[in-house]
Length: 76
Length: 76
Image 1: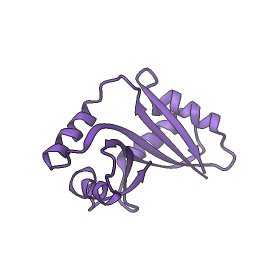
Image 2: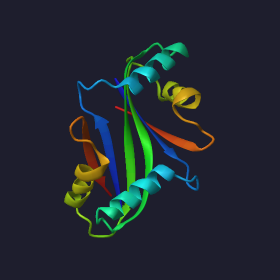
Image 3: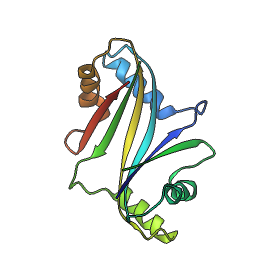
Image 4: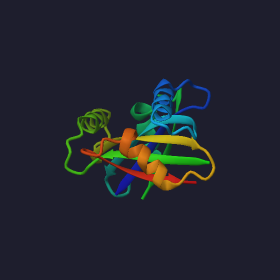
């Protein structure tokens, strides 16, 4: 089964990567872009029966830095 | 309005970052993980009326390297 984890910087944490992307988009003429935040998405193939709590443990221990990042888990 | 762009390496393209995450998860005892692919997610605040085609143009020109990456756009 598949699990998708999305990790984003928490609101209020400066996102220099997102700022750089925004500047580059403006440079290309896409002036309507007012804000950009960049995060990561991790697609996991896990054993059947893996619970969302186990995926949460992976996030807490490795995938996300919970001091500055928040994560969401989507099982399918 | 918001647009979310997800960029993943195409199937068949080696993903060393994903492999590293998989090894680290195994090292932490999460043995049920058989495959990991890592990509990026970009959240854009765009002007009202921005079309999916315009977001697609941003992806083609900047956000994704379409030689090795595929992207999907979600407007909301």
